[in-house]
Image 1 (cartoon, one colour):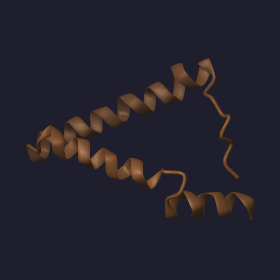
Image 2 (cartoon, helix red, strand yellow; image 1 turned 90 degrees about the vertical axis):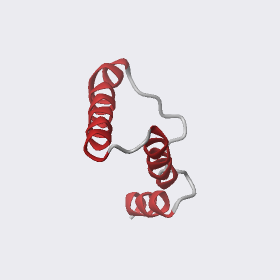
Image 3 (spheres, rainbow, N blue to C red; image 1 turned 180 degrees about the vertical axis):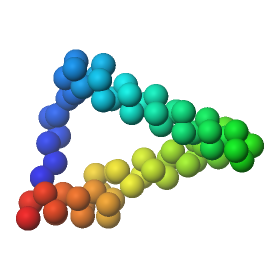
Length: 69
């Protein structure tokens, strides 16, 4: 049961969303420093994660089914 009209509040934007964004970036920098991987690898890595959250992905379908039950 996905809320397609959801938008973050200003509090969400300056709070958890900004903190999570910065945290993810820090982790990716750490990955790149530890492995010396190219920016292209990071880009592709993020795309794989993004694909898991696509509205038609198995991950999203399972999460939405759990919310219904």
